[in-house]
Length: 411
Ligand code: FES
Ligand SMILES: [Fe+2]
Image (cartoon, rainbow, N blue to C red; front, side, top):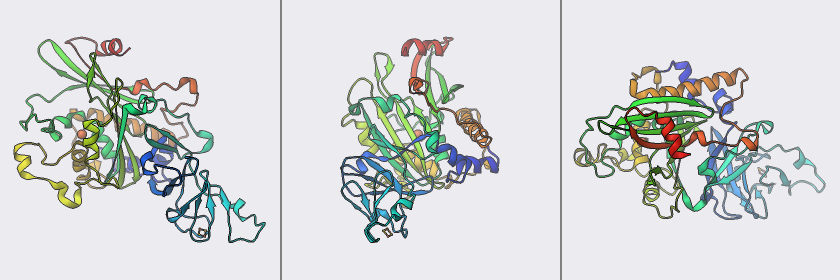
């Protein structure tokens, strides 16, 4: 459980909060590249941590992410005209470039310098793996773009899906750092039936890394061998899950989930799925992810239609009666309320990773309040190594030190 004060501290991320200021120090997913697919296409609304923004792609293909309301008299730039390397407000024609500079104020007299006085908020963007990332912190604190393997892999080997959730980011992130729910919540998704598992109590070994956490779940396979699955958390809200196919005895990629606060009450979840060995085009798992969302990335099954819960299916073939992995996750985490009241929980041993996640975030934000820089950021391009965030999975003889085996397998 958390005190009410710590729960507030960890769930509020608007610009005037300590957590919000800390989160703004990282490169964050803002939208999918496919939302602004070509030069001069229509702009889209984007909301991140309570800030209303507009994203557009200019005539040269550059992405702009700027405050939604016009610097002049605050009409929405979402309705603007995207033309000739700038987004033009349709009220009086002010035109903005991707850096938020006002290029023209055509209703002003010739020679006017009014445009030079405008300070329109704009955030730098970098596209990687089909996602537009942005940095919303102070310019002088901007870190290098992180070289996670899912952001440096061949574009054909990765697919990303976005889901809009109707709850705070933290309870969604806790679901990604909750390895024991899979055997229940997602039971029956792969045709394995709904019989409650007889053995479902892994032992956990959790360790801090420079950028987050590594959590090994150890489950006996038989008397002689044990299965070790290493999940990871990376600052500020990335949960990595060791699921995927195996190639040559190694996990060939895994699931990476970012839970980006839209505001304190809703979240944009991004599923990155990748394979190291081959392209992922038309992969069934990615198709299954996409099949769960509407064109606006809201879930097709959602709280407003009772999650399309089928009690008969729940009785016979699938543990929840709700379809789809991400929808099942949202189903339970949204059911906690928009912001879960963690002062009312009763935690067990199986929550060790969730507890470690909270302690990591709490330590970071409490230290940040005292002026200590947040963890997991790189400022020297030569030190841009995030291999500590990789997931692994191995089966080893009982008594083997899994870290050494893991290092040998993945070296
Ligand atoms: S409000 Fe945008 S140009 Fe006037
Ligand atoms: Fe899940």
